[in-house]
Amino acid sequence: MTIAPHAEQERADATRQLDSIVDLAQHLVRHPSRGGLDDGAAVVQIAASWLQSAGLDVDILRDHADRPAAVVCDVDGSTPGPHYVLDACLDTADVGDPTAWRRDPFSGDVQAGWLYGRGSSDSKTAVAVFAHLVADLAQRADFSGRVTVLYDLDEHTGGFAGIRRYLDGLDRLPNGVMIGYPGSERIIVGGRGFFRAAVVVHGRAEHTASRRGGPSNALTRAAELIRLLDGSVPFDADPALGLPPKLTVTSIHGGTSGSYSVVPDRCELEVDIRLTPAFTAARAEALVKTALATLDRSSPAPRPSTWSRAAEPWPAFRLPDGHPLPAALLAGAHAAGLSPALAVAGPSNIGCFLAVHGVPTTAGFGVTYRGLHAADEAVEIASIPAVYVAYREALRLLLVDPAGPGI
Image (cartoon, rainbow, N blue to C red; front, top):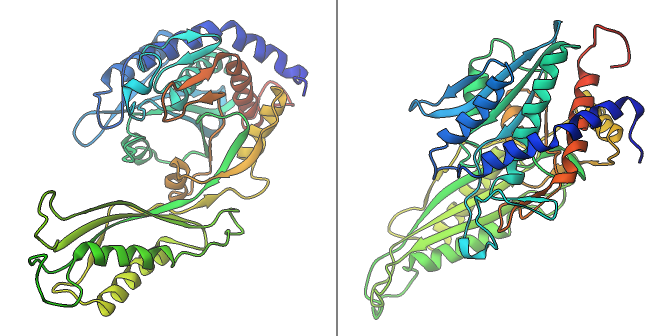
């Protein structure tokens, strides 16, 4: 697909700024910001300082413990209008086994056209792209409304303190959010939600050589519970998402290592259930309760099984067909010479959280990548200009240009 004529100048601008975009992304990668592990103050300062050097006003939001949670920068057009947010996370996944990496996970090396390092794709390159984009918008101001860049430092922990703090401080919610998650082949317009439960199954402690009969081993009862849970989730895809709900037992802990003569009397399980519009958190909760009740009836133990929510559940979401937010981003991608498809993500994302607040969200369109949350994470540098153009053109369509028609 050829690039639309009106986007040629935008691509030229992006290409001219490519070295600066890569330089900022490298700077960010070289400062570890693993969610829940690293301080993150350094990447906050790098992102904020770059925006300030471009003449922009920056706010650093802080969490309840007064730690940096997000960088926020607003750019206003020449007249009032709608408000859209460009979102990318500053924190990253952990590196896993460092020996699996062929290079330092925080090197920021560029080799054969790829920028390497943890967070290069998720989502420090998007941070750099969005920074240059709003700096360009601020110089032109040829639009109506407001564009905000929001860099959340609490995304990979699942806490989302940045986006929560940002929404709490608004008098009026934005018209939409576009998240710069990587991948240029799809524009994500929906995602499954999640329900997470911590379950405790009890047994009766005794000698393993006891002659007492009946179920007493908490591990055996936990295995039966897993069987009950596995068979209780429907396999048919939800028509609204094209994906089915899914249940996964993600951990099981019980017994004591080396205690070969003791029957375990307690077993803890963690359960992750991916939700759809039809299979809600209420249904997931009922499923867990029913399975526990069935277990306790069929194999009574000295104490009943218990459960608790391990996290605040998030609903599934999907933007309606023809919604202006993905339509604008799709048109922008086409203008940049790309042909992504609209798709729904299997994993949950910030769009699920924003859906609770009624904020339309696209949860992924960005640079070409490999090694996401894996060893040797990297982004293809040549993919950056087209992503820049796509978001710039999407904003053209979403924000009214007072200088004339055709935005």
